[in-house]
Length: 191
Image (cartoon, rainbow, N blue to C red; front, side):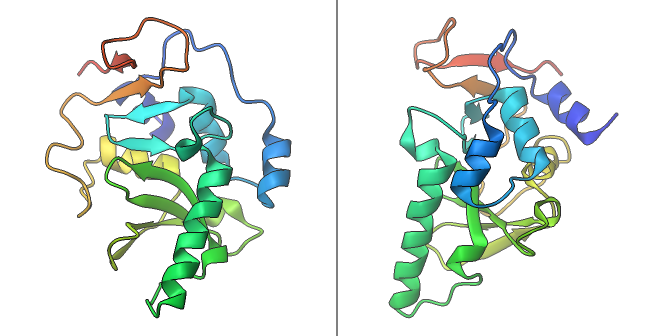
């Protein structure tokens, strides 16, 4: 079983999801780089939503600006530049960072776009703009999710109880279908 198949088994994607993002070349033109294939796979497999109530993979398009990959990335790099101007030491140059996911606690998971022309080899860095700690992960966003939900990777920024013993993918309320009282349609895994 591949890592992708294992992730799908632990956290099933939404049932009956019919719409996929089909404007990848337009997104890449706007961003100025080719996105890694594992990201396109995640977006196409799961769509917009939240992993286990905590981790959001940024989306190519959304009515929710805080999870749009383009606009969130621009604002994040502006914050990093402002921190550098105040004398703070930052591990990576702002132009080397492109956020790909974020957490409920404000942690940002970014691609380290080095070398810029080889997105398949990009690793990740995790930072909360309010802290000086920078964590690294050698692998892409799908590998990171696999490490967390299948292999049990714990990071210092994870809250107690994350990931849960029964992780779920919750669809954002902009998606049609039955929703619970929080406005999210939940797909629970069975273990």
